[in-house]
Image (cartoon, rainbow, N blue to C red; front, side, top):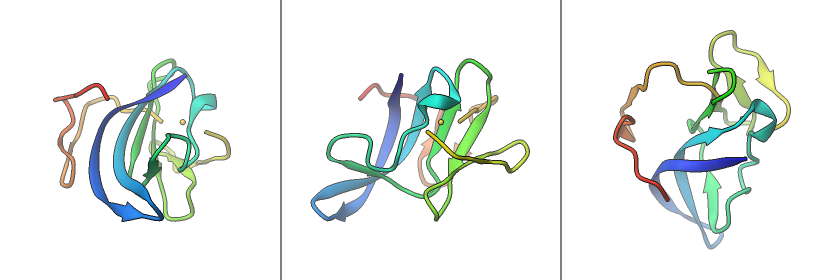
Length: 99
């Protein structure tokens, strides 16, 4: 299971909102595809947090989730954030809003 914990609207493209997202998921097997959420496309630089392992993933320009601790490409759907970072685009990620 996964869900967008917070997002920042960037623009519209192809009738969908392109968003920079912070995603929570049960495990790395739940990493979403860029078009997995209705009406949204997940943008490069989005984060995903794997709750079961604590790993963090970031979406690259090839739409691959990259594990941030060792740079491994995750071929599936997920992410981990140990300390909530302050992102220059999204702001303070410790302030969350359920969508």
